[in-house]
Length: 109
Length: 113
Image 1 (cartoon, chains in turn brown, red):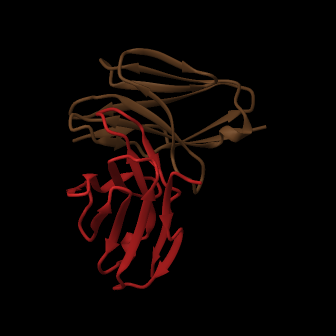
Image 2 (cartoon, each protein chain N blue to C red):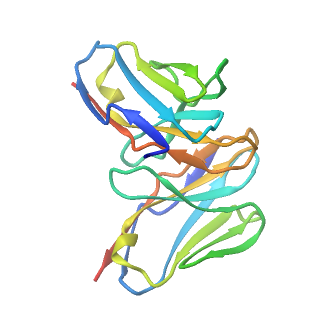
Image 3 (cartoon, helix red, strand yellow):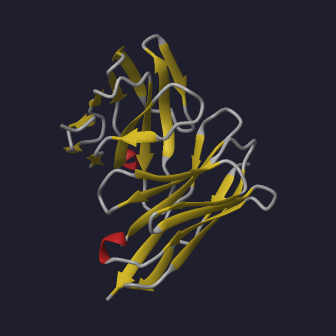
């Protein structure tokens, strides 16, 4: 079966760095997406990785290792507004997105 | 104005009632999707459509039906609502091409009593 695993909840301090991990087992791989979702709101796109390595976009970076079925989202200089759920999703061989349950990130002052 | 809109935003209904959730988009995308989101679970695909005459079942289509009335409109119906269909429902669109991100509407919170 297809499976995406990410931690349910993480807590970090304002100004710090946090890494949110995602492991996956899917039938085929056509890229991995990270989305941010504030409580009660729509998910919004953060990043896309299809090749191994690190993609940096401002305070957010996303890493992929296809051989390990592993990705992480790195958030630097955390701000209170970063409190949200972070969703990992893999595009499978049929170009459909398989979604993880999301990681709720709590930022403390 | 929002690119992807959903109506209603909130709905409370009773078991056995027919419900329609509507989605409209101004992004000009051909691909549209309906998902439901439940606490502790990932987004689950209900139906998707790549064009007006194209309708495809997703992971959890039982108990739901859809209509793609135009490229910009994609409606989700619950013919006879049941309590375990209580969830947050999202519509999403995607541009042509195999790998592009999806853009989500604001969601409809549906409660079936």
